[in-house]
Image (cartoon, rainbow, N blue to C red; front, side, top):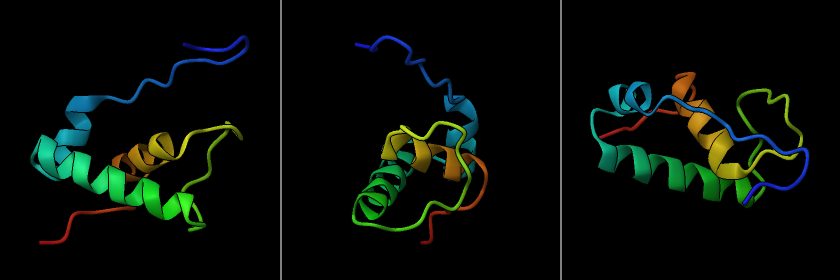
Length: 71
C-alpha cells in the first residue's frame, strides 16, 4: 500500500527481460544487487527519489545497463 505522497514506480518489465534474456536471470540479478545495496554498496545511478527502495534502484540499474548478468 502506498503512503500519502508516494508514487508507484513504473519500470518496463519487457525491456528488463530483454536485458537479461530471461525472467529467472532478471529476478536473480535484481535480488543480488538489492542485497548489495542493502549492505552498503553505492548506487550506480542517481535516483530522484531519496526514499527509493533497493529493489527499485537495482531494477533501474539493470535497465540502464549498469548491472549485467555474467555467465
